[in-house]
Image 1 (cartoon, one colour):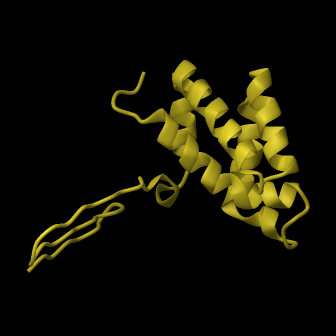
Image 2 (cartoon, rainbow, N blue to C red):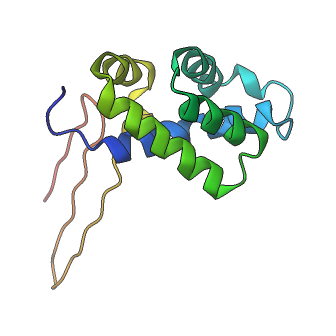
Length: 129
């Protein structure tokens, strides 16, 4: 198993990346939407999920992607699958582009002259003065 992975956050990010394709599947997006990167991921995921609850969650999210409960249910099922299947987890990480894996970050800054710095992606450079 992969150490130090927040499975819930990874599942949430995967669902977020998948949303445009889900809207297309539901017939609620413009033509050509299935050509987006999320579409390839949707087809990959659909072929990989084997647990009945996960398959059902993906189907329900595809029927009504605007329903937050459907998206949460899909994220929960993805999280369970990630925890149970390290091969699936490794493959999912390879399927998602780096920008889809940007972790949510929060900062609390108190006081004058405080600076907050964030670096995302390979080759990112930071110059704080």
